Image (cartoon, rainbow, N blue to C red):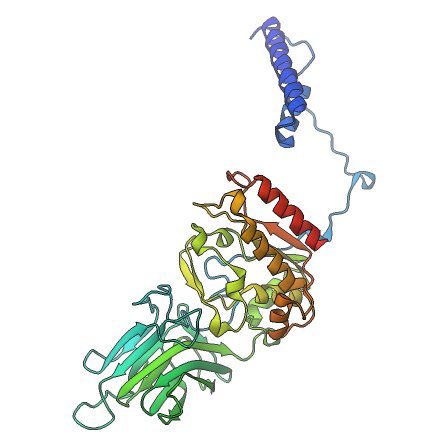
Length: 432
């Protein structure tokens, strides 16, 4: 390109950019980043005359002196926590049982009981699911019909028949540590159930106890709670519920938790310490795409994740494609933030998922859910949702100052709708 042609080309570009900038600034409809880019290009098109073969040399001068520096806010560094790749369920959250309510298939029956498996064959045991649970928000229970007995013509195999759960890729059971086992049981007859931690193949017993109860004691749903102390270590073990007594037994909400969680709050000590070592000033939770869901029906909803763990329905996270019992729920995330000494940033759903979204004229239920969530975290213990928090063991409000309205939704059709704008105003006023 000749010098004359270059100058002509440069002049044309600068004229177009000036026109573009004046129009954009006049209408105020372009993002600042776009305006800045155009301004940058316009300013740095060279003004000097150039020969055909001239070399261009650019110099960048940086003032690194103390007078030009600005301190980095401590609040810049924190943690973005999302339930992805089992970071919570099977990770930080210490629950050892996967799918403790037998509801990974949702509320319909037959439900998906995976990874639960059957001990015994069809001649000795029949396992199914029904909707007979005592918990209204998760009605599915497991029905186990035992066809064999400890004596007689149909004798059970050695060790009995039943079900086992390998947890999340095997349970890490350590010698000398104690584990609290809780489950709910019902039967029309007397029961004699062995509760055990065993090796992956079931041949080696790490810890075991028996629960014996009369028919009258278990005619209605009954909570059973035992402590197991491991006599050996196995990083790939499983939990078994077995019997050699003929009859029908129903199980629901089976939990196995180590006693030595952080402050008894349910967080695995070694993983909690890794988070603490980062020295985060904030923690953003529970996601991420986990908050949105591929579809709104599968989005994380905070109200379904608070209260007694047995009553939480759980949900299928259809973005990362696995079931969570939501034992690590809204309350636990707030508790985690407090334990870490970090400010919580709660991300709530604003009526938008990856594939569907509510019209802005119908967003008010989501606004109310957000306001209720703020009351749960910050409200007085005598308030409706503050009292739920207090009943969970935290009468004092959590220090929730920041929220995120949705996750990466700015490009969605309804995100900038008028109703959403008002919703943001209401929520910001509530926090301030």
